[in-house]
Length: 330
Image 1 (tube, helix red, strand yellow):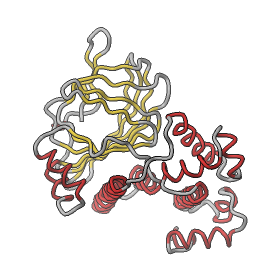
Image 2: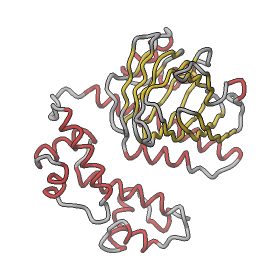
Image 3: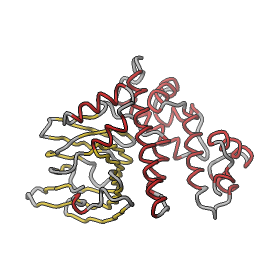
Image 4: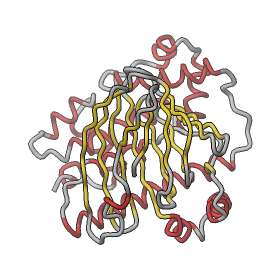
């Protein structure tokens, strides 16, 4: 998908490929990786297309925080958007809509045309991941789903530019795992097609579930200030940075500059899990990734992730995934 970017001197640059150049409807998977270097920043973009699905992900570093972007006459696609690092703001002058997605947040978006501004943190890494479904394909997949998805589908079939939710919820560990599986896919040929199709559908299901659950919540949020919310995200980053030797709740609350009550309440509200429940899921998801390298000893994985013993690791892994670490890597 091509983006037309204009600098301060109205010089035109193209990032990505037009769909005429992408094998969007091919039965097998095509993949293209490109690096870009422009006066306003650098980027490395990967584009994968197959059977009505288009995946694009990459890393960007921008030197100017505001960029004029235009995108017209592209196929009508529904976008599953995941802001992995950095975050950014997209303001579409055609619809007067402003979408502010921060790091580790996601949404489902339909925007046929775009003419507006994009804002990114300068000289900081921005990593994103997107899956695009053809509009009719998306509607067919979600036709028997919940109320929220049906309402969203009606809007896009009426060609209304819309997001599935005004809120951008956090990317769950299951979503991160699915995204990593897609980016690390080593299958070829027909197996690659089947694998990527299943993972894209899994990612859509995980998003749909997250939005349906959020829509059903009626309780008032416990975190009322932007500062408290920012502290919860900081606590998460601090916890994961010290996953092998995790701090106590008291230590984590002190490091984040928030009291324990708000830490526990805010973590559950924001990430749908307790602090140490989230940590446990993170370590096991990380273990699953590490097991893909058969040269790494299971005992080393257990030690590196902070488990007290291999037996403890085996028990936790088997309970989470229904299979032992040894069998998971066969």
